[in-house]
Length: 455
Image (cartoon, rainbow, N blue to C red; front, side, top):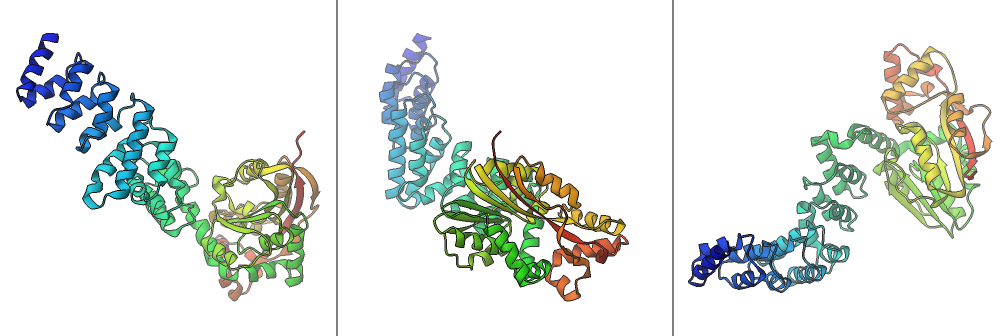
């Protein structure tokens, strides 16, 4: 075999390109022979050297700067080279991308794709490629081409929405990231994610795109009249102010407050007014609700975040001092899971303030209304079951209603009021089709305050 290598090298020196190429494919080719072949005028031969496991670091370093992109890319793909070499190559790639234009950038794009797929490339070098000066176009390219999951995760957190949107065209994007991007704050990203999930519905997971879309649509169409409906259900402006005070009274200045299912934000705004030295965050799945919430002026730090609470509360463990819960507990698929999430995000001694809608009447009509509500994504339960759900959440309960409060009869709403609340109008229509009179169903509230205490 050594003789074969010797013969091929002799022919290569005489200008035989095919002999040179064959020499680079021999397993017994040593570092000295490969160094000689690395000076070949044929890019295919130099690429063969770059791929050979016996090529010396000095040879690979020179080939990393080869003017032919296929040679440099072959080096960039190697997982067994030194981190210093990959670091140098990442620096050069970022620099070339920054100074070159048009077709001259093709080499930088090819190198970036190779580096981003190489698990030996260190995080600092990935960051240089993804977020360095002038790296926007390079990051957009990698969003479509990268395969490494940690690279895709970094791109999903990129500040530029165009880059996050480009991820949705990447077939290597994991299911979880596609679902998460469907809840992105930017409409272009959400639209791209929803289009992808609609084409590949199995990526939506158990929650399902239809469920997310239904919740969002329900909130968007209710946004314009939500506060007027809230006043009517509360029994007037004075009663609504009392509900707002119920939540605001558990807030202490200098704390972190989360309002889950904040809608148009009256409760979060009241909390922010009590909390100028802290931070109040309102979370809702509906862009329409959040648009109206953002139009509010708060006297304290007030942040609005779009989030689908069926996928959890998108904040770190033990970060909140107070959590507000209202109707959202009836609008998620698994109320117990949401309460577990509340326990996760609350700090030790943190408090939950909850006003949870419940069924306040019994009978066939009420049962059929509950079934119609379930078909529209509402998980309504009788008072006892709802109170027990809150009481067994793991919190130390400080106060809990002994009976449903604030009774109202949505089925007795006028046609105009039903038009103001399209979600209820659909529930009422389904209940009537099943033979029920929605006017016979009454709703109320379970009022609760709990505190997180470790045993």
